[in-house]
Length: 462
Image (cartoon, rainbow, N blue to C red; front, side, top):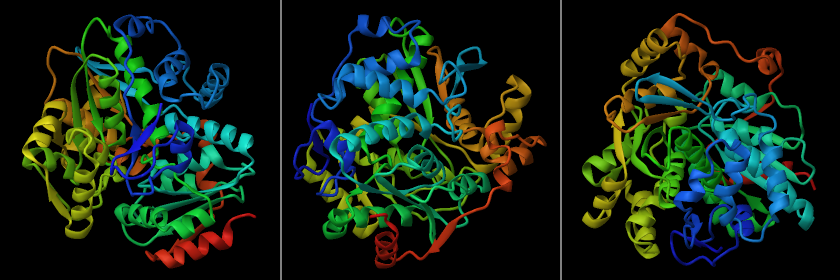
């Protein structure tokens, strides 16, 4: 299995090299050169299997000879041992044909744990084998940062720096990033919004002198390993509802497009998915792109679902690569237009493919609050604002096919919004009960590339 860049000029890499590299040297994102498929019987055999067993079957074709079967099974087992639900990703029924996939039973209470815990295990195994030391820099709109810190804190051969937009994450999200005491992790509150953090990260990867000097690695959803780990719960949940013998649909609250692109990969692998519905909040660039055929940045408006407050959706580049029949030159041209002009227009053939593959919708702040309140009364399920965006949009796409909406975070990560909607204050689980009593350790930084790089070089442990 080889991996190619969405912009067409970076060298092909193995799974291990693509995972450790993150962003390709031509600025593109790595994808497998061929998407493996599973047969009807392969998928049917998943019925009754553990999450870990399904994860091995789904991911094994993508990793080549990076790990032996036994090594990979052990890494998967270790990754999910800390989840507090035996099913890892349990389904809850909301209505007769609508189900909620709870993805918040990991150590940091968000879906990012599914990928980050496994990435942490794979990185550690690879670095132990090679003896190398790396510097991980990540940009987060809230959940990726805490999941990355949890996965890598205390490791001897990794330094972790997480950029998050100052004042634009929930207090729980911030404290999850700023209270770990391990000296190899660093929370950096950057002036600006998430897109500014993400742009700084990409600029660091494109500065090859800096990149090579600190052995830079990335664990944002630009990292293929992140996307791959998320493919698994599409299979586990669909099989629970009768796949491959019946079709299943998914609604995915998304900002950076990684989670729903994982659903696209699951469909390409053979999972019988009917609809893949993109759910956006008021920062609805993905919904507008499908409606108009053009991607136009309009600025970020802070919301009660801050992890979706994004205008530059990195993983959409992977979808464009498929829509343009893997023409890296066209993708590179459109990404340059987005960076230089803030917009680009998608060709008719490509937008037709995207519209055939994805549906979309938008939830306002008022609709999100209303859904949190109503769902608690109707089903007893307490939703975080991001999950409520998904449930709101899913309501417009319900039909004969079972719909699974992804619940991406625990409601206690966003207590103010949940309490405003319902009058109930969601409590943190016991292992986080003292979160607000812990000391914070955070550095305020400007949106300045030179200053960021200087700080990182000063703090890495040699």
